[in-house]
Structures are given as C-alpha cells and as structure tokens.
Length: 121
Image (cartoon, rainbow, N blue to C red; front, side, top):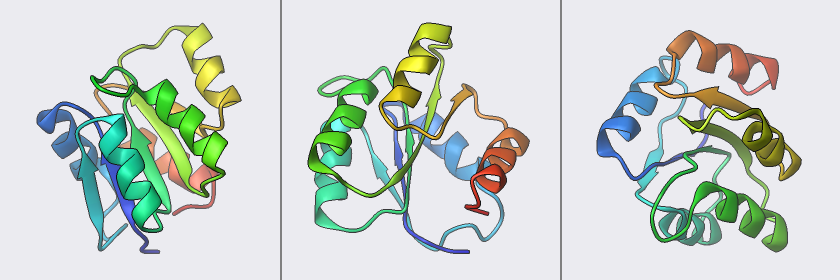
C-alpha cells in the first residue's frame, strides 16, 4: 500500500526516526512539517492519507492540529507520536480523532502493529 504520509514534529531527528520506522515500501511520498501550522497548510493543499503527529511543538501544537482537522472535516488518519505519555493526554487525543498513541522514540514494530491494526498496512 502506498499513499501520502505527513510527519509533523519540530525535531528533525524525530522526523527522521519516524520515517525510518515506517515499514519498507509503505509510502512513495513522505512529507514533513516542523509545526502544526505547516502541517495544516499541507493538509489543506493536498490529500494526505496518514499524519504522524507530535504533540509538543511551537506555533501550533498537536492538540490544536487535531482540533483544526476536526473543525475543517479533513479526512486523514492520525497517529500521535509523543513523549507526553500521560493517560489523560492519550484519552484527549483519541477523543479528538487520533487512531492511536505511540510513545517516543517510536518503535518500528509498534508502528507496524498499529498500522496493521487499523488496516493501513
């Protein structure tokens, strides 16, 4: 399966780690955003099937992105990848539409299992 993926994280190291964690051949097109505002701009300009989203970022954080996606009724699967592993935050992002929550640093096997669970791989 190959469809556009957007990785949104303010850390270039974290973005590279997430991209390397995607299953081999998962996507031919992987875009990057350094904050939520950039991610929203990309999401509004072109179809993105999967957004891998950090929570703690400048300009516009991950929760604000989830709220904006919901408000604009954008169709995109979202998996949150964050170091903020508080149970309340995990519940909040899922209530806002995130499919799942993966703790940083991302584990490739965990990401693959989540993608498989939701029929994305």
